[in-house]
Image (tube, rainbow, N blue to C red; front, top):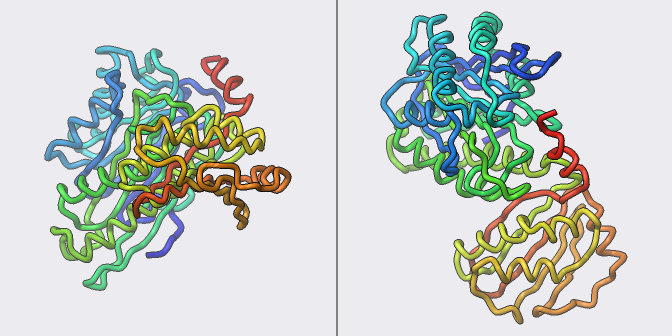
Length: 408
C-alpha cells in the first residue's frame, strides 16, 4: 500500500466537481459532486442520533438496498435537518435533477448536506447547481481537491487522501476519500460527511462489514465537543473498474483492501480531530495494557472527551489529576495504584504518573512538551495486553466564539 495523489478521483472511473450555488454562503463554492462512469455498489454508516437529517434517511434506504449508485450530490451551509416533508422533497428533487443528466433513476443518486439545522434549501438553487456540477465534472486531482473544499463549513482546511493497494492477482486497486468535520463531533459518528471511492471488485456484504468495523476504530474514536450530529454520513462507492478477481471472502485480498480503507479512514479521522473548532493542537490518548479492548476504548475516549483535560492541554497545564479522574469515571475497571502516565510530543516523552502518583517530573519540561502541535497522553494500565487510541483537540476560547454566532 502507498499513498498517491488524486483524492476521490484517484480510483479509475471517478469524477468530481464543485460549484458556487449560493445555498447559504456567498462568494464561495458550496456544492460538490462525486460521479462514477459505471454503476457502483455501496456501503455506509450513519448517525446514531434519533433526530436524523433528510439526506441520512434518503441515503440509508439506498445504501441498504440493492440499488446501484452513480452519483453523490453534496451541499454545505444548510443541513436539511429538522425540515420535515419539504426536506425529503429536496432530496428527491436533487436526485431527479442529477439522474436525469445521465439517464439514470433517482435511486442512483445519494445526497448529503451539512450546515445549519432547521433551514430549508432552495430547490431551484440546488437543482440548477446539479446541472453545473455535471457539466464541470473531471477526473483530475484538482477537481477532487475543489470538491473537498466545497463541502467544508467551519473546517480550516480540506481533508482528502488516496492510496493504492496491490492484490494477490497482481491487479492494483485504488481507494480515495474526503471528509469534512470540525464541530459537533463525538463518538458514535460525528458532524462529518465522508465519502470513499474505490475501483475494487468486492462483495457488497464484505464492503459493509469493512466500513462498519473501521468506523468503530476511527471516526467513533474522535471527539471535539461531545455532540453527536443529525447528519453523520460515511459512505463508500465501489465501481469495479480495477478488474481484479472478486474479493468475496475474508482472505488475503480482503485483508489488503481492509488495511487500505483503514489507512484512509484513520488519517481523515485524525485530521478532523486536530481541526476541531477553535483548536490549537491535536490531543490523543493512547491506553495500553488494559484488560480488554472495550475498557481501553472507554478510557481513551473518556480522557479526550473531558472538558477539563482539553482545557489543561490548551493551557499547557500538567494537571495530571484530570487524566486520572477521566480514566476513573470511564466505566472501565482497573487498579489506580498500578497506572503510569506519560506525555509524548515532538519526538520526546516524559513520565508524569508512576503507580498512580506524581512521578517527580519537571513542570517546566512538561509545559514545553504540552506546547507542541500534537500531544499524546499515554496511560499504561498494567492490567492486560489490550490497547486503544482516541483523538480530540484542546478546548480554546475560540470554540465558544465560533459556536455563539454560528448562524450569523
